[in-house]
Length: 164
Ligand SMILES: CC(C)(COP(=O)(O)OP(=O)(O)OC[C@H]1O[C@@H](n2cnc3c(N)ncnc32)[C@H](O)[C@@H]1OP(=O)(O)O)[C@@H](O)C(=O)NCCC(=O)NCCS
Image 1 (tube, rainbow, N blue to C red):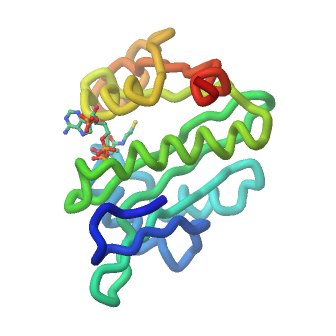
Image 2 (image 1 turned 45 degrees about the vertical axis):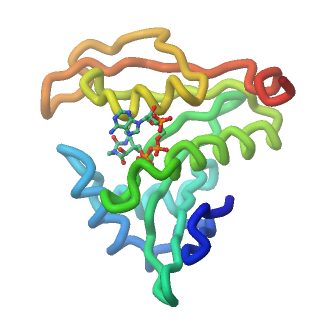
């Protein structure tokens, strides 16, 4: 993953416990009911969870700009969490993280991916559509905080898409 800004160095690492203060700040700014520290710690312990952070170095200082958490569940990948820090949005970071998830899944021989998204979250729905996901279902009143439905989205045949 490379940055178009020559002054910015972008890298992706495995999430570590020490990243959590920065991640929690992004999480709280991003969701009506943010995950707690304990929920992130649980993900870090689960062997089938992939927890990745995208870091940006600007003038010698490194910031966590985004994170993604997804699970391998049999022959499927389930997206559990994705957020980008406000100041780094609309730069293609989420799109790159989604493509990274797809690449990791394909390397593991998995070409089916799924996620749930609030039906009011148009930014995320646009992102997922751009990444090849389509709405295949709905879970009524899935989000108890806002009494919103979840849209269930799936992406398949990623291998064919990537191979043109
Ligand atoms: C949704 C989110 C992850 C997008 O991150 P991002 O890095 O800004 O997204 P990208 O720059 O990679 O954009 C990729 C595509 O997403 C869509 N998108 C992103 N932000 C959008 C916005 N504000 N309005 C409309 N579409 C948007 C667009 O289709 C965009 O493609 P385009 O630039 O060609 O139009 C970010 O807004 C976020 O963290 N939101 C809060 C947390 C959240 O909702 N996470 C998803 C939970 S299901």
